[in-house]
Image (cartoon, rainbow, N blue to C red; front, side):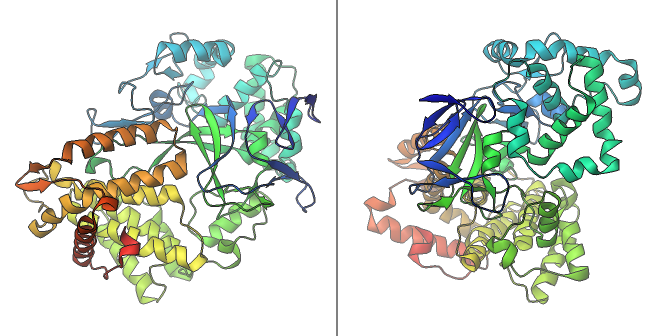
Length: 548
């Protein structure tokens, strides 16, 4: 039976909980209202399996990311995204179908679309109200003289405010919903730097452009609310056609920000039981491990912050008192000067890291000398940067050794120390890098760069397809069986498997795929070959259960 909730929003009673109509779920959920946090949490009233969809939200309040480059490469409606890597002819997408160039709106030339259907849908949903305002802002002489043509409009939070205010009269999420379920921004509003700073400027600019009846204080409050609880718009990347030039890319792409009140009901945990992922412009929250009956649904709001002190300060600034295993029992990590040096190295981008490989290697050795070992988030981050740096220099063999160490040594160590699974999408990213680098001979490296050793080349056909099959088993747990990326990856893998069933020769080596579950002999060959590969990378022999 439908009703009107406390926010003035029409709701439906579904699975024992009154939900806004935009939220869909087939799970039994309930509000948790007894905890100290002033906002209620979301409780699973029945067990939920790892990989299951907990709930989804159609057309949430979401916007493309913070730079002009992000605006040009991401569709304003479906969030399909293009990633040029290594040149104009090398690119990947989040939907596997768009061309490598998107087309701008013919009115404002600020936002871009992947096709005419998305252009028409966006115009009907929101852009008919935004287009004139964007164009007005671009024509303002002050903005053009002092801020650059797209400087202000490339700010995602500012565009999010404009969109919300423009849609305010008819938007399906009323402001009180945000205000009620997103506590904690009060202290920010009392800060004089906030009252007289950028947020005040943005509030006045919004009133000048739109002419809204909302006063400046309310606009500042909305900005604070959005900034306080904005979630990243993360989409799975399609990599079915990928080779080692793509190895530096993660399994997900951060393409924008989103604010959804119902997501904000979910409590924070640095080691959560669920993750937020988008499928097109649909927000989905999916279980990353088995969730027990009466367990609270949790999400990570701290992002990828390997340093314990930085993460705790970030949470403190947002009035989040996390008591998870990572906060109460942090992993062994560098302190003092060693910590500061490690943080500087962890902040290096891929291209800068390629010129500082020796510094990164010395940093890793310093951590080992201080007896912190490999089982730390700092170590994982440094190895990730180091592998990408070697790949940029086309030293694929060294990059492969590092990625093997990440997947078979560092990540299991972190897992065992907390008895919790390492994030599935991170494991998938690491394994993806391994598969790309194993097949790096498909790309001819420069003459002065050695190829994979011949004894390793011989192992590649014996392990590569089985590792890709393992990778495909990780994707649905993160993104869902119906995700575009998962379907395309599966189709590509099945085509390759069918092609290799009868055996093919490439560079003098026989490639043939036989499923491990169908052949004891094939399983033995795979395990022995993997252990030879690990020994080459300096990793101890592993048992079959850790490899298959």
